[in-house]
Length: 182
Image 1 (cartoon, helix red, strand yellow):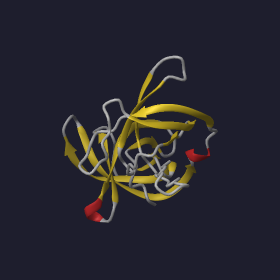
Image 2 (cartoon, helix red, strand yellow):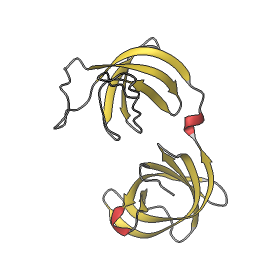
Image 3 (cartoon, one colour):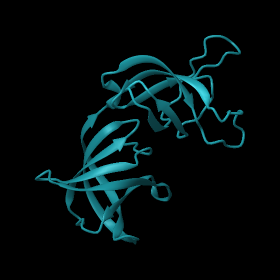
């Protein structure tokens, strides 16, 4: 199971489905890509849990897991290894109902070496659709997966300052020398 982009999870008791805590998720690259969870020290070990992983690509993935090998972290937290024993359910957010819009926005991106010049006023883009799972934006600015963008969205009647992380990039170019990305 590929949960490399997952950063958040919720832990429930396996039998009662009682909520235990939220957890931060990281991938243990040095040891075969296993998952590590940062959890409060109230969590018990070598016990079955139902863990809901919130992954931007796979959606909400619920698994039967065992937590073990605790390591101390600051602020009364542990880092624990999460062994996924079985996938129980997957809810794909890309199937959510979408509201289609054509709303012009200005993207703001922290500059990195090699980036095109981006004015302080931002780079033009268009919000194409919105769903519970995210926002689909088109622009001629080439950005990579995992970059953070910021923009203001005013269609709700008030200005919302939003921050998003790019999960996928599609090349939508239809004419040479006129790039377009989604």
